[in-house]
Image (tube, rainbow, N blue to C red; front, side, top):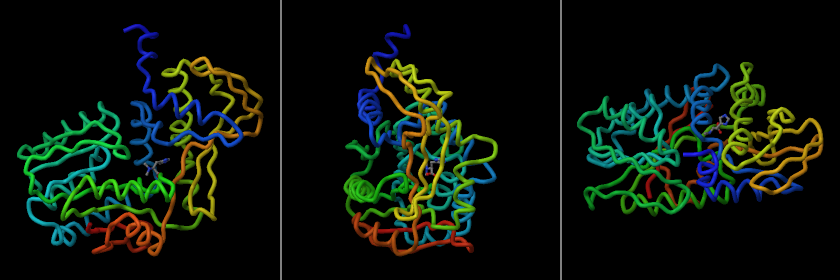
Length: 314
Ligand code: AVI
């Protein structure tokens, strides 16, 4: 396939989001577009960084509580994971509840297939039905046994990457897809001192900076852009009013560029807002779950209260 053909095949939603998001005065591009192949790899690297506490905290929590939450989950429930699945967290859940069917849902088809293959090797008796879809949009989930109960698994505090109105929509959407008698196991990153939060999103090795900047590289490659990537730098701030970490790409000097034939200008000091990562206290996460149609059944937090896993029922 020629480079021109490849560009023609760019995701139309990606193009629409980027063209709308680059228009001033408040420039913002949805965080879900971070995850091309390189972005997914960089995110995986982030999860192993010493500063990025959420993954290891949640993994330890899963290890400690799995016997407890397994007691609440009906035998034979199918597991639907929103996201391709993590190499460590997913096996812990599958070992604890031993479902017959596992349905990972992810926007990145290659990553989804790769992780499904690895899991198939680890769980030879498990039926794995990967679904390539954006789980925040309409999708179709396979039904092997029409009567089966389903457990949704949404770890990593990915819910925090949505603004409150969208996270309520997403939770309701999940409830609709999972059906009657569904349960949800969901991770929430807790509010904590900025001295811990900021380095988690601005690590010394610069991996998160590379993850953020890769969005511009992706735009240039897939949307025929010529954004001068070297003019931008990774910037992280804590927005206390909204209880969230924000990632931006700050422009150091005036630039002019085109994307898909459209012209843009960004002045020195302006930024493109690329990600929100909301943090929660116990009250805010309970309110969010209830607004999304879920009733918390059990909550599990680590000793420092840095992360909470909630088991909820529809
Ligand atoms: C996927 N998500 C939960 C991560 C987070 O912590 O908000 C994405 C991330 N962005 C920078 N580092 C990690």
